[in-house]
Length: 137
Length: 128
Image (cartoon, rainbow over all chains, first blue to last red; front, side):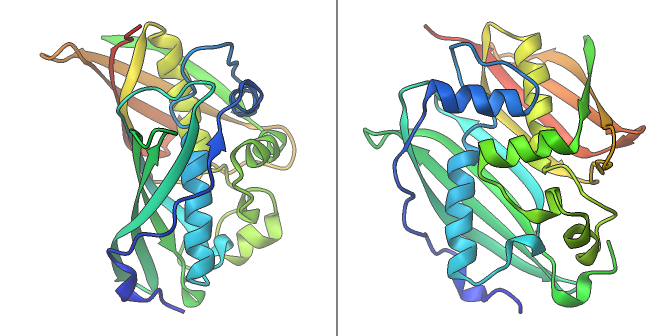
């Protein structure tokens, strides 16, 4: 089922506050074979909040996660994420194109801290593979 | 200026650990049957996993800098076999900007093929 074009411009409810802990940072770094021992979080770490926001969006739109392939991702930082931050993400659908049975969904998530200050803006392009598009990968 | 290239090995166990740490439990990164059913060649690494490797290389190259921006396209899947692993090569070219920033143009390949499109990081000296 194609994604409803009227979602463009819509913002979804902000995610629950997400505490950035040393344990979480170590686990995230270790999962990619690295180490975190203080200092800034890995640069892709805000994907944790952005992904939660994306999941809520996909659920609201009844899009199945396994039909989603990641097309593009970018992070723009106001400041690094550090241990002790409490972050939330607010996702806005910024664009939608339909090409060859696939939906190309552009999203922007603003990640803010406990004071409401912007920490990072992260943009994602998601490719929603339509049911008929399975064999053209 | 070329930066020293880095090679990372990715296994299916890494993808399971990454799913838990990131919250991305998309089965195409763990389950061969689901991945092939949606037309993928097999279990593929999270794009964000590969991007995290690129970010790791950048952080190792520039420990005294912080990231202003980091972005890429996911142009080809990194297929991870059930046994052993697959190698991802991260290379970088450093270019100083006029405004005190440093741009790192990355090349990320798997088996000689580029897997990220125009991966690029912009850095600035860390502020204390």
